[in-house]
Amino acid sequence: MNLDVILFIIFCIILFIFFKIKRSKFEVQGKILALYKTKLGLGLMEKFGKFPKWLIHILSVSSIIIGFGGMLLIFFILIQGSFKLITVPDAQPVLAPVLPGVSVPGLPKLSFLHWIFSIFIVAVIHEFSHGIFARFHNVKVKSSGFLILGPILGAFVEPDEDELKKKSAYKQISIFAAGPFSNILTGILIWIIAIILINPIAFSMAEYNGVQIAALEPNLPALNAGLKAGDEIKNIDNYEIKNIEDFIQVMSGKKPDDDVFIKTQDKEYSIKLTENPVNKTAGYLGIRVSSISTDIKEEVVQKYGRTLPSILFWIKDLFFWLWLISVGIALFNLLPLGPVDGGRMFLSGLSVFIKKEKNVKRVWGFVSFFILALIILNLLPFIKKLLFFIFSPVLSLFI
Picture: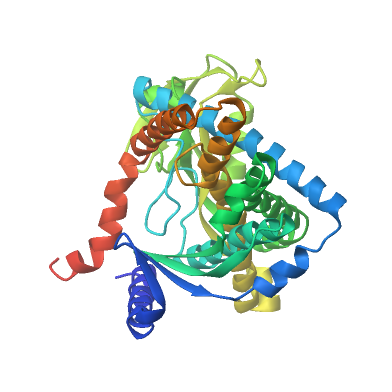
């Protein structure tokens, strides 16, 4: 049993004990969602709500523009990716659950601690922003707190729905868009800090070993030859591949229609290269590669020991997941789907152009059902992996 599974079990036990002890303070909805309501942060939201009106207007307009822009983007990506998933063999889903124990091609392993820290930070920023924008527009925030959905911990704010319904569509949409808007801004800020400060220091201390295929592009030589995500590239044309620099050096001299001989951990392939879509004179396999393992350079260990660089690498990974989860949660929440932020934005927006409430809800329901079907289609490959991760502690007792 690995450390992530142990931490996951401990986390679930703590949540269960806390729920039992504080049961009277929880509001249970649908037997799967438990809300723990508090007044935490409401005073701070009130202070932010007193910002100058011109600033409130700029933030509101910005959140709406970015919100609907993100909605169109993720809607297009989901439709295009779903079409490829149905029509192109071995195409990868465009949606993936970012959970520990669920491997996603092209992404590093997500540890439980990175996941729980990232989810908590992103959720707090997301919900707190809803509360701030609600107070911007003089909508009362009745409570804040955290929620438990199965083993997943989240946050929430509870605006006064009666007051919210009386506001204009403009104000409603800006409140709904506040969470995704803040997550996108957070993701950009984290990305800038990581690129400028954290990553350069971490990369200078690291030694990257081994090369594996992180992802393959459809209908290109590598995929057509039978290579798979996760394959380790050992050798290309009798040159040993120890790291990504070796891979780049060997492939940089290849031309379109060149034949390359690739040896992986368990098989050998002869592949004819195609044109690089960016540089027509260069050969192209159609793969994205990543390092298999990362070690601390020996000279760094001698100077600083292993603890300090290991902490820095952990922080680097945390910033990566914070960036990815911030942007991912923002875009997912902008989907025009039922009760999520994008769904409520879409519903309020429709009411501006369609006056009959019955017709508004009919269009909203159809679009939500269509989006939900596409989400399920993309998540099917991961459901099996997720179930295995959840029940693996039980299975390990019998194996």
